[in-house]
Amino acid sequence: MKRADNLFEQITDLDNLKSAYIKALKGKRYTPAALIYGRRLDENLYQLKTQLESEIYNHGKYRQFKIYDPKERVITAASFEDRIIHHAVMLILEPVFEKQFVFHMYACRKGKGSHKAVEYASKQARQCEYFLKLDVRKYFDNVDHDVLKTKLRRIIKDDKCLRLLFSIIDSYGEGNKQLPIGNLYDVE
Image (cartoon, rainbow, N blue to C red; front, side, top):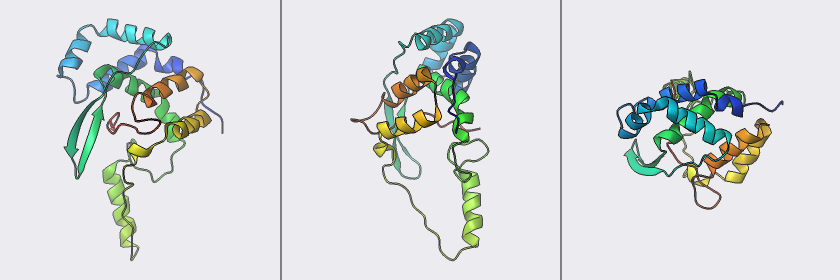
């Protein structure tokens, strides 16, 4: 399999950052952080581009809150500017990652999602006498950063892109494990 290259320049392209800003606004348009960032949008995006290109960008701190859907979960939210970075990365890397996924993975994928998953599971359940329902306990708390980075290196050849991804991965966690639930969940 050929590894993807020349991704970093696409991620840091001003048009991509502007598209990422628009995606980051979804559901956050009237928050103080989004309003402040938008007042000097061109200047802020150019500064973000410069920080990324010179590799001095540092991921900010996260804030945490609980949701109850259907069980209690601690959601870890990145700052508005960090959300722009996350969207900028995914706008470019989503097609690269999409090639890696099995067809019947439904979480956070365009044209899939929880409704399609339930629809497919219901169809399959009608054809079988038994089925297994499970949830991986504390999955995000146990994701090993080194294992994830090794998998990313197999897919991506671009060193600057990898360093950006690794900085996002390492921006959260205890020791060498744990990913935040809630970093990016926008699916259209």
